[in-house]
Figure (cartoon, rainbow, N blue to C red):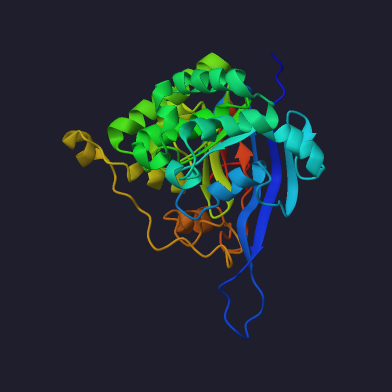
Length: 335
């Protein structure tokens, strides 16, 4: 097993024109992803968390080149995705698949389950007839569905069954990397647990790598080996899963974890309340310095004690001990 990452993203930027600009005002750019670097090893799960609108889903789609990168590098198993030819991308893309948040919207409502799962087998693997049907039945069994469901259409399935069909379809081309974009957020809690366990079993059995995009921190802790926290298009903290949850170092990560409900009343009384105030700034007009400076409860301490102007000086994502990376002026080496 090689130590080379399966996926390596360096200084990735995805910018869009601002479609909501007002007449007479200058053109602005929405910085959906603004200088992100990350890696995913073979058989590893990287959890990607952050508030809605921070750029998580755009990052996932850029990895698959469903949206074009403005600049930066995306290397998948040694192949540069941002500059690869269309024909080369077509041959490589089966190894990278996407599991959608809303499987019902992602599945053609007029197609049967068998056709939904079997279409990739026909196009990419050129399977037909009994051979294709055998593979369809195998894939449905792998995700815990009876082959008899192959005759049904998506509206005849439950939400959990539709998500399993989406996963089976993603597995049809034997991928190495699954990008799971909020795969459980539209499901009931009991069904969420079943889908999470299914993904973990499939990873162990098939050696899959996951980029797991979510806002549910409990789910992220259950599935992830490492976690990256995203805010306003940038990674502000990245660390092994337990290290990040047990000892978060960035003020934004600390506030996120403090917002998670605690069932134990005694622990809840001892815990500090969330300290975030205000709304996340627009990605079309982000702060000049630290992108978290408009909401940071520690900004005054940094500016007075360390003499750093958070409003105008951007911190780098500096990796400290044990692979813990933090983009904050509070941390030595991050300025």
